Image (cartoon, rainbow, N blue to C red; front, side, top):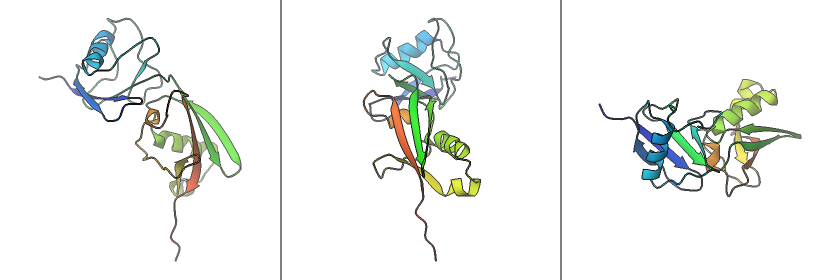
Length: 163
């Protein structure tokens, strides 16, 4: 039986890399797979499995939890991403893991702004000072440019057609 394929997304590097890695892989084996794909790991690099809240850490012989076929491995310099959301005259902040998706931020924002589910469904997150509205499955680390580890969104209505 062949090893499952994992998908590697590196902060600041376009595209997705693929590697075969056993579900029972150790931290050292994960680092080796990343290195084989040309991904450099240093003391300031954090690795997250899918949308996990905590980064992969421990001794080299310890097992990496959460690996399976299709797992997304996020590699970057941010341990957390400080995320600000503006809605009308209100502003809320929260830190998310780099692998968290835009949909998680939207769900959190709808909750903290006490939006009715129907109203929330008619709103989207738009990057502050832009017209860019990232897809709901976009990992937050893909939206962070440089190394400030911060994001800002406006929670805005989707364009409505009334008639």
